[in-house]
Length: 179
Image (cartoon, rainbow, N blue to C red; front, side):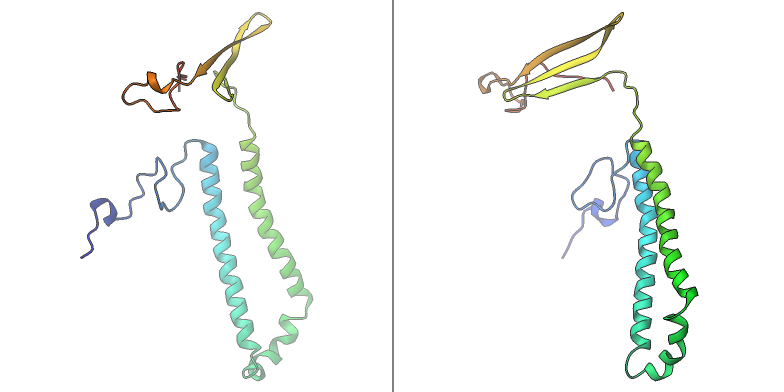
């Protein structure tokens, strides 16, 4: 017998706060920009599915109409109308360009919103050196002078580690940033 756990019985989409193995879809957005990316993805999928089915139906219809055995019934009547004509050429040109414009407008808006610079309350510059980390706070000003507060953080040797600390990840000066 094949037993499923309670979590696996139903496809649960309520736990997307972090990525899971074999997860379908995006995890929950933490920023408005990521929400915009997710919405643009979902909107573009409608266009892709429509274009896929349109091309599949057109290809199937063309194969059916221009097959050697059925060409007598279908192709002779519709050759001049569907293959050669000003109206169909305009349609073939305008429709893809219209779709591209409809897709480009929200994607450009999203690109410009990504480029928007938000003035942070605090900025921290982290520099990774070979055996230590260097940190710089550059937000402190006195009059016209901008001061930087900097310090280094070294790895804790293996002999000094206590139970529960991770080797090669523990440092002597930890960084804690307010959220």
